[in-house]
Amino acid sequence: MGAMAAAPTEPERAHSRRGGVRARILHAGGALFYSGGVRAVSADKVIAAAGVSKVTFYRHFPTKDDLVVAYLEAVAERERALLDELRRAHAGDPDAALAALAAVLGELAAGPRFRGCSFVNAGAELADADHPARAVVARHRASYAGFFAGVARGAGAPEPDAAAAELMMVRDGAMVCGDMGDATAVGPRLAGAFAAVLAAHRRAAGGPGGVTSGRTGVT
Image (tube, rainbow, N blue to C red; front, side, top):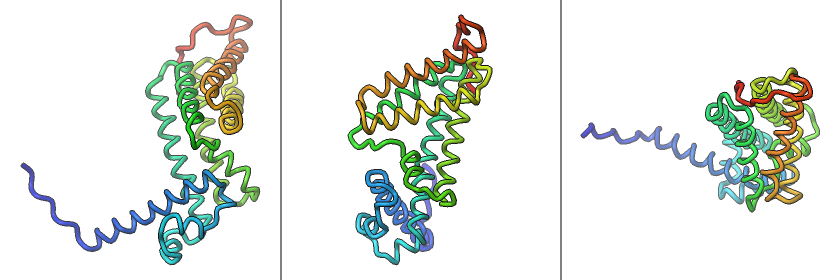
């Protein structure tokens, strides 16, 4: 049996309480921003949902924009982890990586509270190019573009960045369709569209017949 852990000090307990309150505000704000939009949801509405005072809210997030940025950064971190997991799980098989991503996004789209992509939504709402959240959106899209370019490069596409841009457009469209169309069809249709883009770029690399094997790599 190991030694008994020392009881937390009062500063440690205070830090934990502060972290818990911040997380509660972020959770409440994130849910409201995703369902109602980052512009439409006021700080007062988040404060009421989180059950905190205005003083407490503004101690953790000096402006509503700071909370919007934190919300998007949290979502971006989860999605980067997903892409990293797909890279590892399907190294050497770009087709399988795209099929797995399509399956995950299709499952999300079919969920009862799906309202599209947080980043597409925020980018559409925040027209000011200097808004701090726009930088988070740009970094998130660059992360996805890097994933798609790695897949395309692994599949032998001669222009992986062009292929990545097309795959990103397909992904964006699927997220809109999941919110406004037949959500249950998003997964299989997205998988087919991903495969078609990759096949077109393989044909460009290998002539009319294209490249026959998808197991080149995912970088």
